[in-house]
Image (cartoon, rainbow, N blue to C red):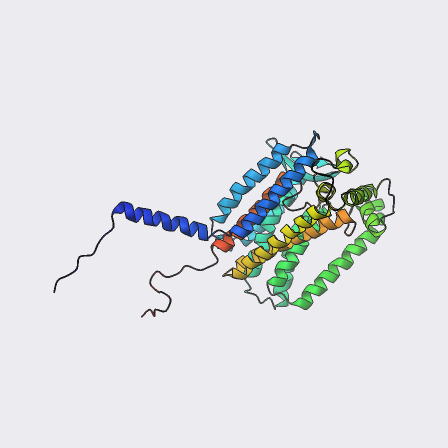
Length: 408
């Protein structure tokens, strides 16, 4: 019986097909909607920061550009790494978190700016370790809770997880950084909730910590007098809380920032004054405009329409990231996305809320918008993990089985 010879492709054709497959595989592994919305947000932020920092010598716009550029490179590297390789590094991430939180307290490298010791200076490069620690805290919390596979019913195991998650928070509170402490606490509670922790225990824990915080506020004055220094919160932080409770409190000093922020937002009207025409920030009435109050600059220059555009971009990004979480094939990936989502959502609500007077004033940056290399790098690193979860959303498929074909 004659045998029909098999046609073989040339080596060049095979290599071309393999290259085409690899390229197609890479393209399919990238979530273009998530990446596109994030890059639009970053570009929007660069535009507003350029306007807010124009003519201000204390801000370096090139550093912001560098932060975006390095952030994109880090994002691409993390995207190509299988995120589940990190699932067993729980206590490595824990140790890194603690070290980063304590770095600003080291005498030689720790830097005090505006009365806060939250920065370090190494080889001429200044950064905020607590920002970078957010990513390691998310990885730590996700890898810790993923061990329980969605069921954390044991009281002793719940207590162990809860205490471990609190340790980095207490470390950052040694810097008197209440803003970052709140962000970490929200991340920890969100990951525990998604990780299957007993709901009743979570509620009791949050109420107990809230009562403890209020008790410290009440006793803070007595403790300050006893120790001869600020023990729990500083005077300017107390003033911010008083201004939040009563916006008319000390409008010339403690309430000055909030009053100027509200004037800036209100003066923007429907369409704003135009790029570079903000008077509150441009004339120096609004302190910390490129960082804490960047939303006010946007609202004054682009008005209600520009502000709603930003909120719609954020809503779109959160929806798309949530879609990535639902498509993750393992629990660790889902918990990573939960941590990142909770971090971004809380920071957006807190930053915009404090600009409007709906939340206490803190130093929490607005994701992809506020001036700051450290926060920009963290946002793009987080984006890299989101893209990695999407790229590896399906387990390795067999090359033998085909749809509709039964493998013997």
